Image (tube, rainbow, N blue to C red):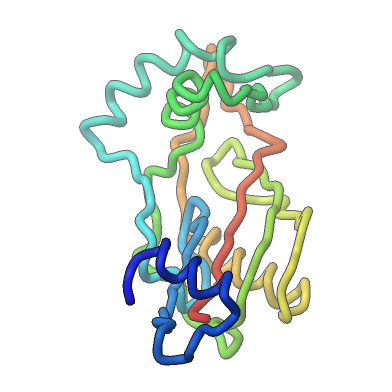
Length: 186
């Protein structure tokens, strides 16, 4: 038997034989975040990185789009919130302001790197283009909060962003959100 209709018909009759059901092994990596962390499933992920030739053009346009993408006050900026129908604008802003210029090829592994992980967190990009102020907002895992924070920080320590310079002042970008959903094999 093959096809979803045949399986559904067999299920409806309550006489499904184990031989009629195909066992499928699924590997899932639903969301990889913006940079590698110390997790075994991260190897299947790709990360955006601004190359030097693109960075030159982006530097020219950052000031033009500043008020469209960020809300700045007192030396810090926060990303604007976008609705689902504004994804093109969101992606442009993300490319201009929060895409790294350097992403590590891989973070070092930990003994906990195979555990399933669903985590959402906030962070900031400093005026030097480094990540700081990582705070977990949501965590679903067998790992402890400190283990997960360690995994995230291990990759974040090697990530670099282009510093945001406006009118001779270097600004930080705060209140950014990211996450990882790494469920391994089941």
